[in-house]
Image 1 (cartoon, rainbow, N blue to C red):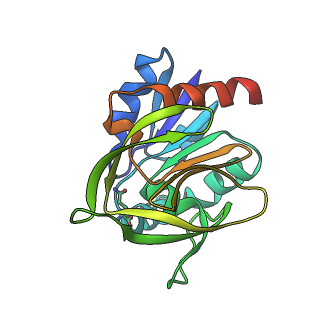
Image 2 (image 1 turned 45 degrees about the horizontal axis):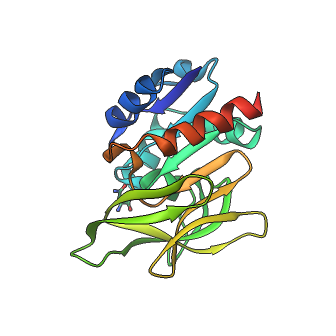
Length: 189
Ligand code: GLN
């Protein structure tokens, strides 16, 4: 399968390695033409404000939004989750805005905002979660399934074709989140 990884800023290389490791092809998305023929899409962590600006500048925001709205399976992590959110708390900015959740940015952290912890993810199992200046999901729309909570805060969720985590699965050596995502793509096609 061909899985696009948005490669304008942030931790995209680590996602690419994981995709290759589980036997699929990672395509770096740097311009509109790269969006052709994808089976799935990954929006990596990094800095959501910068990523959002680059998506507009490179004229990819609308295309990506349409592709996700039309069902393209998408995994979004950390800043990627912020890009997908319909609402950002205390902020009027909407980037892609396809996921009916309210996100709180830079809001979740026990140890100077970055830490690693283990917690269960529904359908996936216990998972080592790395949080870096992470957001958390404050509120979810009615069709959004909460997959994991840490300290009473939602850190993973899914709505249909969109799978999101507040932590960075690409920074662990556990492939199960990416395998679950690959399974989502298979059952969508
Ligand atoms: N703090 C970043 C933001 O608001 C997200 C952090 C991350 O992706 N590790 O975009």
